[in-house]
Length: 134
Image (tube, rainbow, N blue to C red; front, side):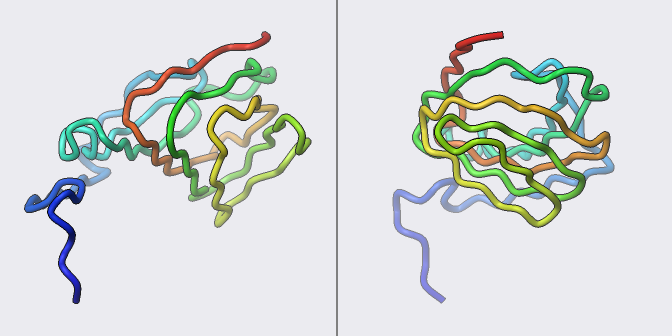
């Protein structure tokens, strides 16, 4: 097995995050809650990995916005969501769906199931989100 390069994220460290001892915090979207998986601290802020789930039922679409970042990937663990992307239209994500989102693309969450749960990975860990319209 090949060894990681010397500049690898979290080189020489080991970390486990268990759901039974996890904390869920408010975050970027008021209708979601976030479980940090520990990657921000391990990578010095180079990468964020977290689990996201609804903190309340979906009662209206979210705001139109975009993110200034280098990389964003979302993998759906359970449930479903409908998201509208500028130039692409509405896409339904469901358990097993994996999405790479181009930086800067305008999008809005239209609707999601009560059990919608995803893993999101972003580079860098902290980035700017710009709201374009309510």
